[in-house]
Length: 223
Image (cartoon, rainbow, N blue to C red; front, side, top):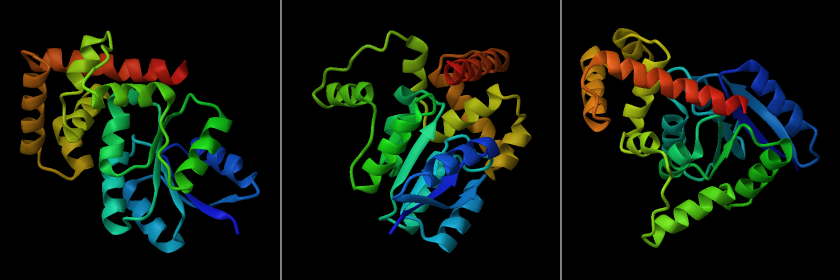
């Protein structure tokens, strides 16, 4: 019997690509897909998949928040995050949210299938570099990243990082509030904490830093 995979990605072309890849395998099949976290929860309930593959960047709740929701509703349902976002910043956050693996989108088809099967078989999937990094952290020997900006971003909470990225994508405070279903006052509180953690003095500098971060994500996804 084929094991069922549910795809969550806000780009239709990515969903079609995953579907083509998965459905070509003799032991796997795509049972459904969604573009948002809300659609994903409804779809998972209807299709009862064996694995959810999700991106981080989604409208409304992001992939990390979706993972938390899925784990609350279906604790035994494995989730694999496949994203363009840097694994140094997001892999550990994803695992802490309940995901069973993290893979960057720049990896090839064979790596995607290998990650899916590993997670489906009850194991955790991370790149070798990320495994080494977590091992060093576990034994108290933090490997220097050589990137002060990345280190600073690691101090942000999941929601603060989400707000930071949305600022970099040009969303206003009100638009961020609407997309995240929170109040503008809460968004402003997040902005204040972000500025404090990143040692940013004003909103103009916050915008500049956020735009630079989003551009960096784009550069890595195209590499």
